[in-house]
Image (cartoon, rainbow, N blue to C red):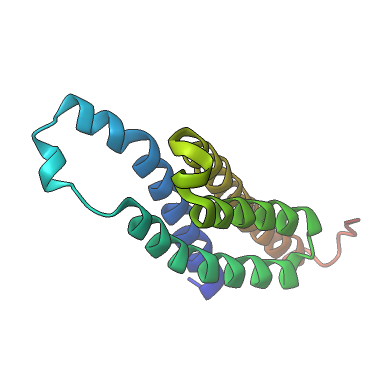
Length: 139
């Protein structure tokens, strides 16, 4: 498996971890308050740590994919997602409010995951097109 595929899959997993953390952890803590102490950690630190990994992994995977298949839309969607995620972390719940931060994070993470899924599909499609050089494709 090549670096671009590994990076895409890692970025998808990390983006979904952001979504799970933002949406499911509060529900879990409401349902099982005894876990609150065990799961107590700095929310801002968690988001900054995820961002520390998501941004470089996403940039590497999206750029490698782009150089292979030249799809601008995929880059734009990924860039918007990364921008929203960065904005959510930088502004945080102090400025955005708790719900604003969650909404921005979920939307940004969804854009990132979608762009990486699209990146993987475009790469696969481009590879299969090159398997049949006698077929003329218009891209």
